[in-house]
Image (cartoon, rainbow, N blue to C red; front, top):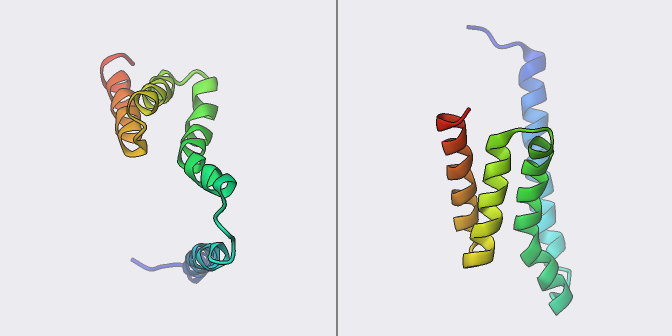
Length: 101
């Protein structure tokens, strides 16, 4: 099996860009004073990212995504734990896709 040099170059460039953005974000956030307002923004990010990933598919009528979004919302409100919200969302989406669709 041969690898196209253009594809390999694209993968390496994307890996470098991803690594750079993560490292740069880490170093730039060291310069930002963590005020209560900044802390609230940082605490809200995981939920915002989850909704940004799931909402477009849910709006288009993907019942699995809609169930996952609902389960994640309920789990977040009940437990306040982002990890449990992700697990609940994934479980609900998988269950709907496996047994309903």
